[in-house]
Length: 288
Image 1 (cartoon, rainbow, N blue to C red):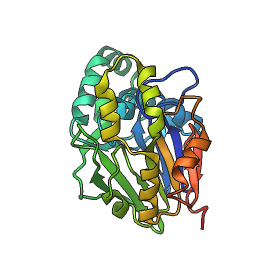
Image 2 (image 1 turned 30 degrees about the vertical axis):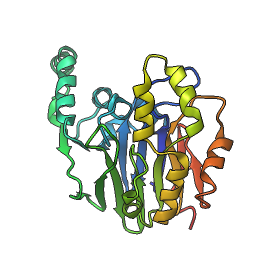
Image 3 (image 1 turned 180 degrees about the horizontal axis):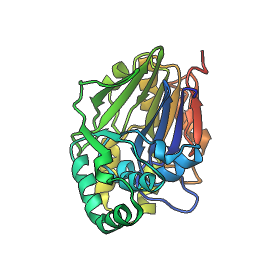
Image 4 (image 1 turned 90 degrees about the horizontal axis):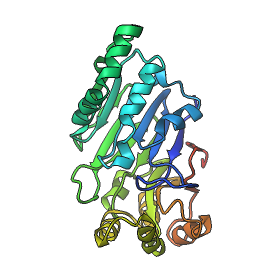
């Protein structure tokens, strides 16, 4: 298994429209392990499209509790169980995930009980282990060390960027955040930084498309997300080997194309650049 990052869904925000990308989810393949990072709508299909057998699911990291990052966590686990999952799955993320999982199981209890009693499947709840992340306390996954830091994503107080290190390879998933200079230190020298990005000129058009918010939605976007030039500045300050733009705002407005993203990023970042697309596979170390 080669070391790669697959961007399963690259859309920022929970809405989907005809022709749009899917919300945030990623698959890291590193040191012989496959690790899911975030579980927005579409993650299950995205994993299958990458050729992954769902029964092989073992490890999931969730950055924060906005729906475009964990809406499909429960359905993914349930579907994996229906597809033959019989080994434990460890989930790491902010406080509140255990409640989410408990309430999801409660909402599906009739189906879960029927499948256990009528089909002889193992107890679903017993397979899932939820671990609350504490920033600064590493998680060790055999040959992989996972570090975390809290990003600046108000009004949430628990939004985690994750760094995965194994041997000479390192990948950083920056999570949602306004421009956050400490993230550059966290990502120092990584093979790949996956960072959210927003185009300032497109914000008003996005607000108009959503249609059911008020001026608070615009204030949230401006105070909680990173403009594309600042994502590029973070990558430059970190000295990473490659930058992938993810959680794109917007990702479904035909008036904004790769040319606009390139124009926003290139003044601040001269290195290898991946403008996220659903299903994109990035090979680690290809810039060496």
